[in-house]
Image (cartoon, rainbow, N blue to C red):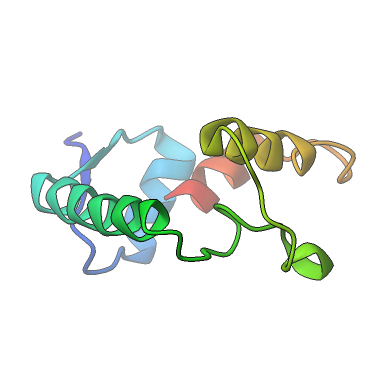
Length: 101
């Protein structure tokens, strides 16, 4: 079975089912990678200019007005790790793969 190539134009239910149930591989299309790289440059330029960017160099929620100093990458990892636990029962692999597709 060929990999599902994400192009940014949508994914059909049959594709999601194949990823979730049959273990179909998923790849990011080259055009998408190019758009992501361009968007990242814009984000980096905005942050370098001192612009406040929610969740990148500011806190979240009630901490919106709090500046985050230091390593933005470490802050992003901390956000993910802080939200990755204590959220209930572990989901079946099929459900996780479907969500990620």
